[in-house]
Image (cartoon, rainbow, N blue to C red; front, side, top):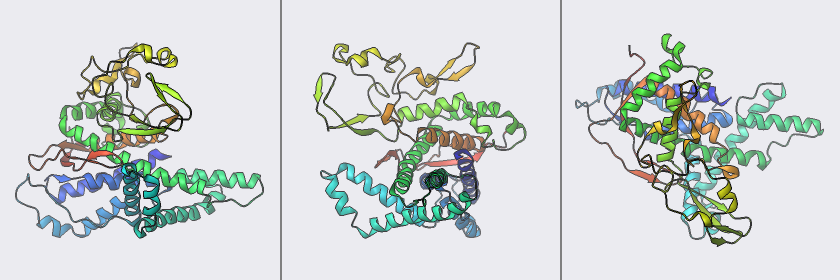
Length: 419
């Protein structure tokens, strides 16, 4: 269900960047905002559909198309000059999501988060943002009900939720309750949790493409072998074809998430008195768990094994750290090995990684996150060469709900025309 929608939105991004490359006459440009808007389109499409009007990327593309002649005539003579494009304002839905994301991360750094949220939720901008997103969810429910009532096929996550409620109501001989907060709030959270994280992961992936062009070439060549029919027919791989994994791309994604995980820590609450490495931790204590750092992308810290719990000692992983393979280095091949037939395969168990946390507290959007990255990066590498510009490159990052690059300035050239 999700793959075709992500594929469609990614194809719009490809068209948008081709248009930008043409209008800039090959000059570099910043794609950070494009990636944010694309990620919103992708998560919105998977969650509840974009509708015939499309998403933010289509709005931006229509805007540039209308100004095409004016933009082309303004291109600077210097081919290394960063080109800036006129942009239309974000959609009301994306702007509303941004307001909610901003409110959420500020709550993490406030000394009294409960009091902060009570006051912040009374702000007109926050109330308007909530009404905008919940109003859109309600409108999508209203559109989906007649279609699903006639045995229509679910097209997004919200459709499945509605369909289950309609069937449950029919069995219980009652009217479906489609304004239940248990339906609305998870979809609302789905958007917030899936937007910044996927945007940050994609920005870090593009940054690594720029820093390591050899990885671009290696993965692109491997993708053309994995999806040989598409390459021979000079077309993009379909969503159905992209269900097949590519070991080199999977290893690249895993290494990006190990080194540059956009979410650096999470907070859990202890449900009972416990002991962690010899230190007593009472029940109802907030505990921060780092998803990066020692043993993951930094050298490990020596721990006396005798102070670990019995279960920890019994269920020790086969590899607890990367100390013997340069943990601070970006090396996607650390995730590759050969199987019994000598074929190179990706193996996520070769070492520790916590980008999506683990266990019962693991991210429930993990599969969707990996799927989106696989589809997007495959189609981007299939279509473009990513080049690091000579001027204006910034390596600054921002820290909010996620840690990600502030800017991502790239120069694109067509890869689909390679011999």
